Image (spheres, rainbow, N blue to C red):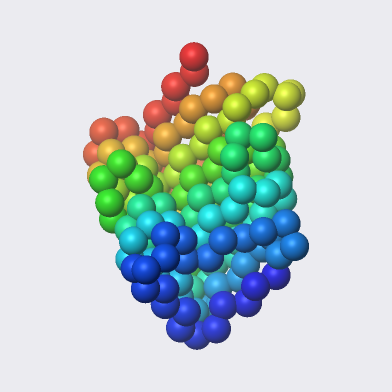
Length: 172
């Protein structure tokens, strides 16, 4: 696990603020910590069972946190109360998972340009992914944008909003 110190700022010379690998598949951003990526992704992982625990801030131009490669499973993102993940560029959003049997728990603030949360499950393996929201998920377009074949269980006791739709699901 990578523990982010109080200020971890990434300049625009790199495309990814923090790339998680199989050897270290999780990250904790403490309450006073921040990952600021002015060019591309704040945190990215293409391995199964990646995890991010956000008590501080992740700010990125494109995607705040992106996990999965289509063949991955078991990704987990937790944004605690007082934590935030945001992105600003059109065409992107705050949290993205492209793996099955994964979860997002949000008690903080998740905010993106095109979506707050994006799920794209590649196959229906009989499992399900889930979103538990007690915080705020917002976007200029879609609060939650879901693609794919696997069941997505959403439990909401907070706010999920998007100017186009709070929730959009596309299945082919």
